[in-house]
Every structure is written in structure tokens, then in C-alpha cells.
View (cartoon, rainbow, N blue to C red):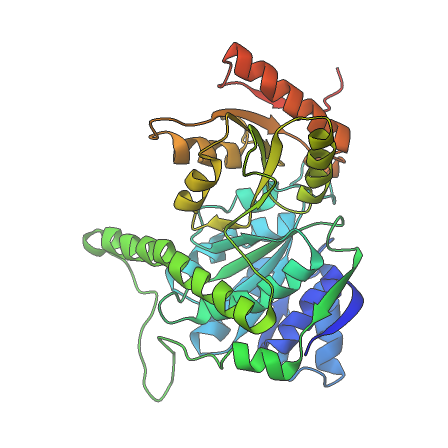
Length: 391
């Protein structure tokens, strides 16, 4: 049985990594991620976790160490944020291209310049096409659960791909929340030992990551993409197994008061909590407003999103990242692409909010809903709006 306790979310993630029996942790400190690896370093030093903690000189080296560790069959973990994730960029593609089941937590933080240590989604959106399975947590319990689930998903031999769990910097990573910490015995029942599909072994030498000549490269990339797309089935299986064992339910798209909603707020991450309060307040005023929240970002859950929004008149797609020179925010663009070929689809209004950690208030969601209604009446779907910009 799990134990209910109050815990900083970063510490809860560290606890999840310990319960998952990670064997290699390679990391470099960066705000607001540092608490995760500090706690893991303490666990290793105190003998609570039997693992090798590799102190590296950069995030590029951290991912490089995880690549090497996973290739020889070690359960591997790292965590980072913002510029640290950007420094890993090259190695992210290598990890996914080599089909290595590494687990990483990204504590989402705004990208410089100007320098910002506060949270938005610009770091992970720059890596959305790197070939990793990508998940977003709203709460501390989700962050704990998704971290354990990530190892099981990544290491499934039908998948064998790296997984990133995203949590919002400070607004989630540094807060203390009540959550259930599962026992080691129960986690062991859920998460079996890692059995790699391919393993580097000096007694049975093989080559991985060799040159991909033009005659082969396209087919290899197609194979990688097929594996990522088909990982959806395994993710659903893992969430079903988790629900059956621990009682907590997970879906690619989470909904709130959406069944009869005419306008849906679409968002990811911890800000969904604020949006949920706004929905309740608008419902009290007679507004048919609901919420849909993206948990699974890659592979993109096309079927789930189409089914969820089918009855709505309009969607207010709220991004915490600006796609410079593009049509607004990445999640809004993906939503439009997913619904483009439908005979009947909701009107979609794009909004950018919360950049650089700026608070998104309940009143901001009121503004977003009112603006969506106005744009729906005027038919101005192609425009996006930035919320709270000072003139």
C-alpha cells in the first residue's frame, strides 16, 4: 500500500526514480531542475539507492553518459531544463535514433535571451521533433506516477525509445503537494527489470549507430517513426495496468466539464489547475465552457483529440511558447493540423500566455473565452493573440 505524504514535487520525482531502481544517473545542475538530482545524489551517497551517480561537466555529457549506459543495458535517468536541454540537442536525436530507453524529466523553463529562470514551454517545444515520447504532468502525483510509468513504457521491447516527462518550473517543481508514494514492493511488481533489445557486450561485439548511407537512412527513419507512433498502444496498456494496480487513471487527453461545452480551453501542464477554476466560475454564470488538457504530446493522440472536441463550437488553444515567425503556438498548430481534414470541425482561436513565467490568472482565462467568442462571431481564425501584453 502507498503512503500519503506531503512532499516537494522535485523530491517526489527523485523518489520515483529510486523506486524504479535506476542504475545510472548522469546529470548537471541547472535551475529549476537541480533539486531532483541533488536528492538523487544524496540517496546514492547515503546508500538508499544502489546506483552510479555520474557528475558530468555539461548536459551534453549527461545525455552522452546515459546513451552509453543504456546501450550496455543499464536503467538510465537524467533531468534538465532550458539551456541544459538545448545543450543536449545533438544527443537527444542520437538517443532516439539508437532506440535507447532513457528516461528524462524536463523542468520546463523559458529559453534565453534575455535570461529567464522561470517556467514556460519553449525549451521542450524546441525538441518536439527529436523522436522522444513526451508527456506533460499537471500535479505532483502525476509527476511521480508518470516517472515510474516512463521506465515501463520506454523499456517495453515493442517501444525501446526514450521518454521525457515535463513538469512546469517552480509552479510545480518547487511546491509541496500531498501525494501517494507507492511501496518498493508494489513498484517492483509493476516495473520489471530492464531487458534491452540490443546490448553492447565485449564478449559478443556488435556495432550500433554506424553510418547510415542514403540507400538506408530513409527506411531507418521510417522504422523509428513507426515505432514512435505505435508506442501509443503500449502507453495505453501501461496506463491500464497502472490503474488496475494503483487505482489512478491516465488518458492521453484529460477533460473537465467538456461533455456539453460549446467552448473548450486547450492547455498543457500545471496551469490547467487555474483554468479548471475559471471553467467552474464561468459555468456558474451559465457559460458552456470546458477544459481539455494534453498529457501525451508525442506520439500525438490524433484519435483522442478528434473525439474529444467533436461537439464543441470553438477551441481556445493556449500555448506557453511562441513559434517565432510562425502561426502562434506549437500546440495550436498541431491541433489545427489534427482537425484540418474533418468535414466539421470546431473554430480554433490561438493564444500565447505565461511566457517567461508570467502568471496566468483566472481573469486571463475569462479574457481568453470572451476573445474566442468574439473571434468566432467574426470568423477570424488565423490570428493569434498574446495575453497580458503591455502596450
